[in-house]
Image (cartoon, rainbow, N blue to C red):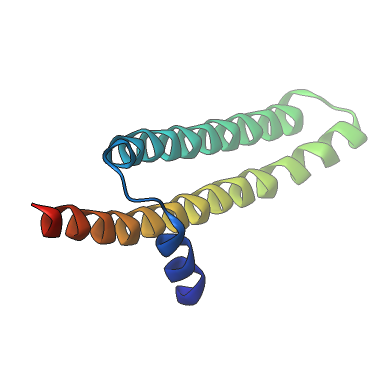
Length: 103
């Protein structure tokens, strides 16, 4: 995976507007993580609601499926956020050093 990060970091164009794009990308990544967390909480609450309040066996089974699914969404969101964050840190370091050399 480190090779993949290095290749992606080298492909980023180096111009001043890219510095601003890093901030926007980081905030978008954080919003995406929050969306994954929100979805995870919604799935968990739905699963618990199906189990506790609905007496039908099929709906109860759906509830039991939604609970582990909510944890999978949470783990997926965290892994995605960490991957994008690593890429941004690596790319930002390369971009920052190039700007400092130009001064």
